[in-house]
Image (cartoon, rainbow, N blue to C red):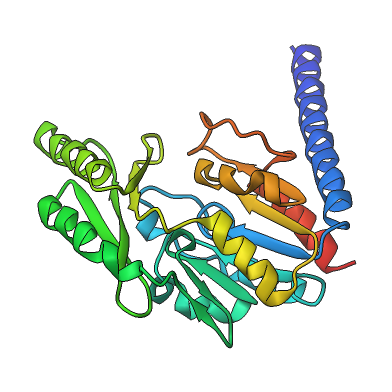
Length: 270
């Protein structure tokens, strides 16, 4: 009995060691890749905030924010988020710039940039918002620019959604498409994003690159919507976690959030 237990213990230790070696291998590889860029663009949910359902409950991790404050001595650090600036304003000082409303609004300490025709989409977004009304099954959050233009909205839920509520959400998605808006749905993470076609992280990054004179850019994301930037950045890092396991992206590097943060800590202290 003693020998059998001892063997089990040794096997368990060996498996843990192997797992640790795999993680450390991923960390070292990422550290080496990040040495060749000068800008980090990081997503809010899944990177700065621990991924949760529903997403509106996600809160920025103070330790991660402090990490990015430190990294600003080595990189230009940019936050990318679906959310309005008002929702992340309290953490804005940790970053050199923000891409808010899914790229519709660029915010730097000196400049705010939004598309000239942003206001044209407000009535379409608000019409869909009125259709959704209030429900105990889901929460609706508008995406507004700092000038008040409603350029999108999110629908988020937790647990089961009643059939009548699911029908309301499906009608809202169809309304959005009929009105020329874009729809992005993540069933596993329990959310739908509806946004104006002028909301483009790709376009926002191209503009920010010129505004700040950015060089080599690494984009760190946990979301399929960021696939549109993959071919214009120098390093695209996809962060794998329990809410996006079914998502497959053609990324340069795929890591867990644990591996990502460990790599950034090593760079910050080097």
